[in-house]
Each structure stands twice: as C-alpha cells, then as structure tokens.
Length: 167
Image (tube, rainbow, N blue to C red; front, side, top):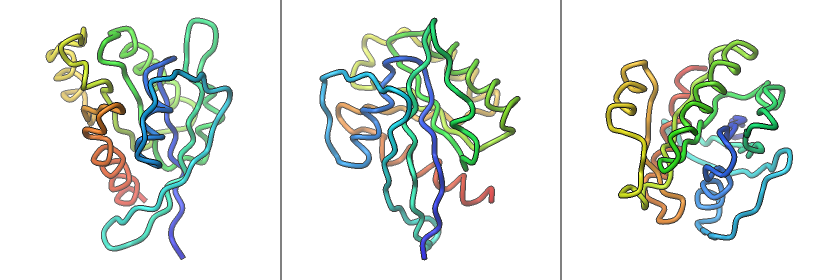
C-alpha cells in the first residue's frame, strides 16, 4: 500500500495555484481564470526513493486583502507549496506572511516556494536579489510555469522528496 501525504497549495490570490495543480495532475493549462472557493482536492502518485507515494493535493483558496488562508486547512499536512507570481512582487510578502502563520500555528513543515509564471519572466518584477535573499534564509525556490509546464514536475517532486526524508 502506498504512503499518502497531504500537500497544501498556499499563496496569494491569482498566483497560479490551481493552474499548477491542473498542469501537474492532468498535464493541461487553461488561461481561463476560475477562483477557488474553499479547497479543491486532487491526487497524484509519485515515486520517491523506490516507494510509491500518493500526494493528496489541497488547492486552498488564495489570500487577499479581505481573506486570509485558513491555517486550519494545513493541519495534518506533510508539507506545502508556497506559490508566488513573479510578475507581482507583493505576492512574495503574502507568501512570507503565510509561512510565518503556518509555522506559528501548525509548526515547521517542509515547503518549497514556486516562483510561478516563468514564461513571463521578461515581465517579472521580482528581483534576482530578492530570490537570493529567500534562498539565503533557507527557502528552497523553484521557478515554474503552469502555462508551459516548465519546472512543475521538478517542483512537486522536490517537495515530495523533502516530505519523505523529513518523516
């Protein structure tokens, strides 16, 4: 029987969490924006160190000025992906706020930051220095594009490996 691991998708409103899950689970991308209400759950099997692992992906509604991510959704998670939109620098601030709240309320969990919208890198307003500062602080940062699929498999795999190693 395969291990099951709950993985949460966290981040600001409209950073691409749902698009990343769709790309990862179904290998598709749609540029039609649909707001996630509450949480949507998907599943995908991966192999880590020769073991089959079922990733239960919780795509949680994004955070904006009105609502904050409910950290209660994160309880029981083995890890999380913290999604940032490279074209919107404020989404890094939201990600840092979410990370601090998760750590304070749930404890330390393995996480990977997905700097999304790599296909629009010429429009990015997130500097290389800011990315380097996150990495210097110990954060694992992966560049992804839900649109092209670039880096998506590697990012989910990186978190799966961290989750299995930390158990």
